[in-house]
Image 1 (cartoon, helix red, strand yellow):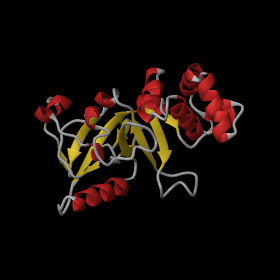
Image 2 (cartoon, helix red, strand yellow):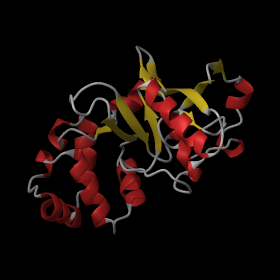
Image 3 (cartoon, rainbow, N blue to C red):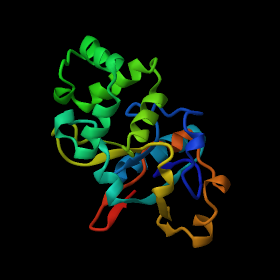
Length: 212
């Protein structure tokens, strides 16, 4: 996780109080490519007059990643839990927004990005309410290809972990050094996270989990 701030745990209560644009949904953002997180940490640190920021290695469960919606795929190609969850919350207003604003009559044919936008419109242009609705339906977050991979349609991804799911994330390292167990046990109530921290953490999938 790239950030200009030091903290010991993700705290979703800080999301939305700063500069983060949260374009792919409201939540804590993770990145599979280390360079993405490093770039963000440097950029935001320089804004604050700092020479460098903090790079966090974060572990997220494989089960969480497997259950996320894929921002770049149509609803019909999503994991089964995502298809079922989305179809259960697509009310008449959301279907109308999907049709009127994006031209999709059949939600299953629509890319998840369009579904997310339609849901946000139906909720009064409330992105937080759209993310909360998806989370309540059983979707822990969203994954999407990063800027360096989007043109090829494959490569490394970024991840959005919806508020309420951040307790599943474990910070393993800060700037290459292990985070002491006593710090991890503090929990978000004693940690510091800023909204710009909810932007791009390093995350590298392996056989056990995701590192970020």
